[in-house]
Each structure stands twice: as structure tokens, then as C-alpha cells.
Image 1: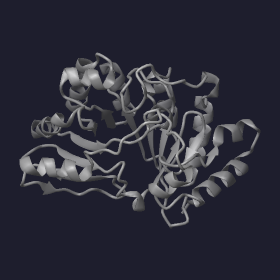
Image 2 (image 1 turned 60 degrees about the horizontal axis):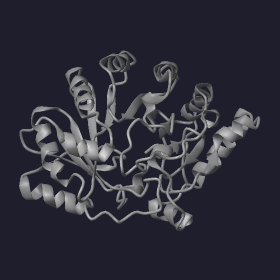
Image 3 (image 1 turned 120 degrees about the vertical axis):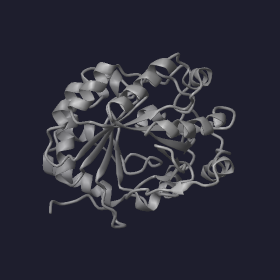
Length: 329
């Protein structure tokens, strides 16, 4: 068996969330201010060659699932060429994507050709006006068309909706009704403090409140399998084709089984979304470090992974949180 990335609590880390850009064509309120954030200079981004080199190392040490994120990954030029390259890596069992859904049918067809069939789409409302208020972009019809095209093509689609009071709580039930006729998985997330500003209020609509709201309208829910290392607690309405889940992303009830690492587009490796960077792999390889030296630093970072998100956050004290577009979600 090849050497694995194992932290001090015995957790095997085999899942990498890889951000290819900090840029996005939406301006969702929970991710960044309306005017945007100060995006990094393009030369600070890891090149596709550097990303591929690092992925070769990660996969050699047991990472078999990679989720490509951003920002919005499709705003980076020649993303499909990069996906084609890494799809050939030995040991990489699954490539998935998180996108805002502003994709063309041609792009979707290209993903299917590469064997990429699992896609998470950030979609916070099924109402066109609320969608605009949340994203600050008039792209609702385009996103919905992309979702329906993916479903038609047999892709496994998860819709991620960040739930917040005064924003979209009235969308919870329509999302569940969407699963009646469509085999999609909806995920309701607590809001997290990664909006690129220094202000954040603890979410009133936490996982408990969201669950109770749903049970009040669907009292006969079926519990379905969450899957190993799942961040969501999943359910189904009897007779419905799809499922839904609730992710306690702020309450962090799932940290004990975490198998994730995050690599930002600028090379910052985080062993926890709520924590500080453990190391900057871009700086390391650009300083001339050889493969053994990169591996040594990677193993050290993984070994020091915090117990959970609260411990990781505590180390940062009251430092402002970066934008989710930078962190890669």
C-alpha cells in the first residue's frame, strides 16, 4: 500500500479541494462584498504545470479524490485542458467540480467526455429575483438551464444553498419539492464567516432550525445513507426521486471524520477551512525545493492538522476571515 497522508488523530486524508482561481463572475453576499475583493495578481496563481506537479505528489500519497473549485473555476482560461491532463493521473479515482452553474452545454458535454459526472452547483434560490439579490448577477435562467441539462445528461448534481434569515428561507420547501421529479441532491448549508469582511453574525438558521422547519412540513422523512466522511445529514421525502441534506458548516458537527485538505490557487495549503495556512506550496516549489523536500513539508503539515474547526479557528483568534472565493470553499 502506498504511503498515506495521516494526521495525528489517525484520520486518512484522501480528498483535496483544489482552487484554480480566486476570481468569480458572481458577487454572492456571503462570499464577497458587492464591489468584489482585491484579487491576486495572475503571476501569483499556481500555473497549471505547478498544479499538476503537486497533484502528482498528492495522488502518490493516497489522495484519490479532487474537487476543483474557485472562485468560479470556469473563469480561468483553458480549465478543460487542465482537467484533461489531470484526468490521466495514476491513482486519481474521482474528479468533481464546484461551480456557480453559469456553464454552456458545450462545457457540460466536455466534462462528460472526460468522465466528470459529479458536479456541485451553488444555487441559493429558485426565485429569479431572490437569486439576483443574492448573487448580484442576472444569471438565473442560464444557471437553471445548465442544471436541467446536466440532469438530462445523467450527471449527479448537488445543489448547495446557503440558508440565511431575510435572504432565502422561503426557498427551502421549493428546493425539496424540486427533488420530487428530479434526481438531484439539495444541500442546505449554514452561513459561514468567509465573506471577505470583518462582520459576521452567528446564523439563526442553523442546522437544527433548518431541520425542524422541514419536519414541520414533511413529518415522514426517510433517513438515507450519509456515506463515509459525509459533511451532510441526508434525507428523502417518501416517493421523491431526489434527496436533500443539511450541512452544519458553521456548527461543525462533522469535524471528527474530516478527510479533507484545501489548496488555494496561490498555493496555501489548509488542513482546515477555519484554520490558517499550514504552508505555501507555491513558494516552496518556486524557491527550488525538490520533490523530497515538498513531500517532507506536506507530511509535516498533515501531521499537525487540528482536531476540529473550533480548535483551528481559535488559533487565528479574531483575525478577519478571507473571502470564500480565495479559500476555495
